[in-house]
Length: 199
Image 1 (tube, helix red, strand yellow):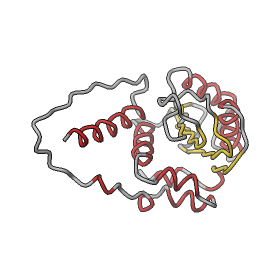
Image 2 (tube, rainbow, N blue to C red):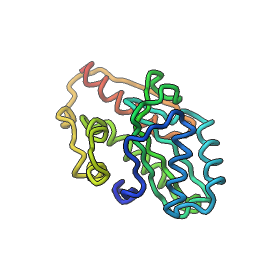
Image 3 (cartoon, rainbow, N blue to C red):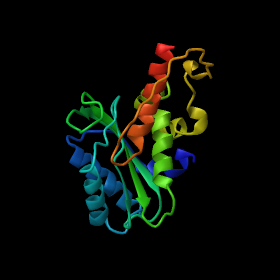
Image 4 (cartoon, one colour):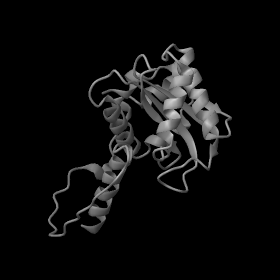
């Protein structure tokens, strides 16, 4: 799935001055409502904050991906805000994460299957690419920001070439996440890096 298809320039806000997670989420939900993505702003806000209470949606390197599957969403969309000044108390996987780049996922509950998981997977895998987050942070226009999200704008790390492992070492790991999505893919990437370092 091309993430670019879920975002347009009307759903992006660059370099805003917001002071709290609540302010950020409310601003993004307002943006979705203005673009006629929601049937009820109040209902979707409630769904987002309920999801926030389950587990952290802050990740690392300034990222956060609040999300909810909701009956108040008409069609799947992603609203984005890049902050002028980071928020340092957004609950995150990395406790030192200072959030400045937020992708809010709005998914209709009527959508069958695991669309939200697929979107989260694609986003989190993209974020692990070398220089990707930095490019988003430096994008000068909304158009440039969107173009970076297309598959051709995501270039693999040089170290991601397939490596034939000759070692007899094995790593067994178990990861756990209440939602079972973004954190799992980040953990997988971390394990791959650790495995390569260990040979």
